[in-house]
Image (tube, rainbow, N blue to C red):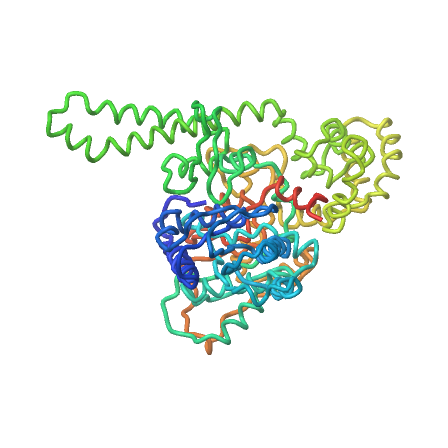
Length: 594
């Protein structure tokens, strides 16, 4: 996200405060176990922890050695062991095995578990069942929010999506409410809260209860409006292929906790390199939101500008050279290194996407979004069935061909897709296909295309087509779309589709609520709400267009970082449970999570 500053937009809050608070609390918890200790960290906490506290800082507070928690016996000679873990029963069982193994071997140590972001009763029950509850001290590290960039904050809880929307496990709702309460306490009060979705409503209720129970103090509001949007309100957007630079980097190299690892094919060295992707990277900040077709031109111009800056040193006297070396040279070298990496990444992505026939994939996606050439799309899908384009199957495809190619184990995957409404049976449409084919032979191609749409409208389908028409999500075919000067949010998908969640926010802002969108919310299963924060909580002034807005999305698609430039006078802060794309969404559906 992190667009360049606009004159009419407000300054963003300083979210580095969230890091400082998390670091101070962690230090306090570690010091509750005085003396040398070994720290065992759950694997998916290592990257977030690295953004908060480095190894040097941990060692300054008596952490002797650091280990990754694995499902294997641990080897530690330290008399004190501390586990930093998520509140997961499987991980607690690993810890319990460690304690019981020590008991069997006659070892006596001090044990501590730090749960983050909170501990659940189920975890304490496991400790009690294993007979070690009295041998262990437990604490909570309220590490709710990790700033990934100036305007992107994440809970880094990828399991939130599957647990809540697929398994119906609502244990993370309180966590979402607590994260919102923390943001409200530091940067609120908020003026209005808009939301849609069952989980969004529960998160709001959890936050409201926490606000009512806590002591309120007057402070300057740095965030105006809050939007709460469930992931299941908009599944289509994260399933579409991304075509902006940052989205493609995430698709191919996997951005993890704001960091990406580029291999030797990008670095042109013998080893891989981890690079932090945020607004501090001057090259990345300028191309992250650009359509990929524009990126090479920008990088070429950037290379020429750098060369011009280097050439300034020619003809300098000693005093000018000294100033150049002390003030400019270091920055130029850093920028040159980053430019080389992004050029290498762009070339690598171009090769991989060309090999995957990316343009044909985009054409098929766009046809499905528009509802045209469905038979050709089915043919393409059946010829290219693989896990990378499995999301296309959520529209139309033969299940038999997939099972024949990859095995019956994907039966559970499709059961999960059906449960979420991503896979819809289209039996009536199948019955009409033969009739459509026969009639098509009697008319010309143009008429046949119209008949295809007519027959398709009779078939059983999801609400997407109706929503698309109501909100004008798919621009009219035949219109020229200049990707260099985008006119709306559709540019993130080459002008073929305006993200539904972004369109909803635009409409709500224009209407100052959900009035007039009753038909839309009905098709999205309702649960929409808008709340003006009551005066007895805290005082506030009327919201102006120069207020910040915070978007809390129950699960958030990477592309959305690129979509909010078009709201004049607003700046958006994206708060998400985890960054998601089509691959991660499909992985959450796979049966290996069961």
